[in-house]
Image (cartoon, rainbow, N blue to C red; front, top):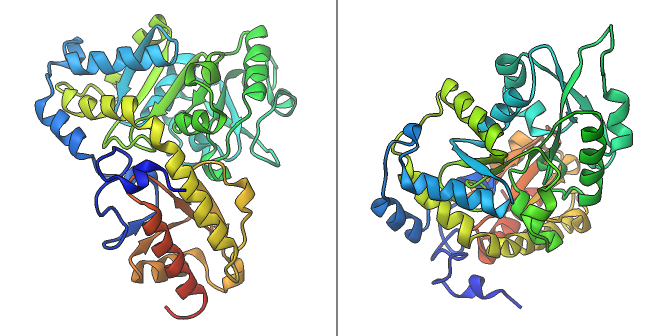
Length: 367
């Protein structure tokens, strides 16, 4: 049975005509969503002020609401998830230290070496077989007052794991890492860009899932569907210093309540509809798994991201994506052999059906 938001165009999880029977089905990322009509109205009517002076009332409401949802003292609105992560790293570390993360982490692969550029820190990645960083795996990578190596300054986790196909990190493993790290005086930061997706899968509040972390970044502009922005939450002292670093990085955005207004709607209304994206991703995965030359395990698709191995099609990801685009379907290559598909509020079940038909046409030689 379809969820009501798939059949009722008036609900926030459904956009009339969104990549269903017409137009491009864009599955490259959940960052491609357009603001809803409700968001556009809120943006047009937003009360604003100079946020660098702390005088934008809409931004202040967003920051207070984010902090409350995560059980924190304060929050900070930032332009992007990358900036949020890098601000946290800068606040938690000293130049010449190391940051430990899982080897497929966003901060290691997709943030332009900013940890080295901005904080003077080395990222030390830890390999896992399943994407779940555990204390016993990262402990050998720690360096504490070693005369031959830089000190560890920070441990970083990511939930959900982007390059692991939207994998949900088990909360008990994260809690153990935070506990052990704090016992030896190390802070732990969470890249929770899609933490609301994880919360939807686990049926637990984000405050419960993230309570052990010293700081959390989460995105408004991914699964939650806002046009711009991410949030950083933590203690009042941490956010006070983070605000200074944001200014140093050029992130003081002045009358930014016009964007925060959309973020408030995303934060309040869109977590409840993430289950639709997850169901669509599983539907897409089950269909793709039946096509010749494509390898993926639908059982491993937990959230809104799936990564398919296309080696058996005889095409690399660039050719595969190009042929898909000829059918008005967009997807991104991750490696030469793999392609990522991401479901979101601008692609409904009919859009996923169109995407499956396009992939079938490509792999069966009808492109």
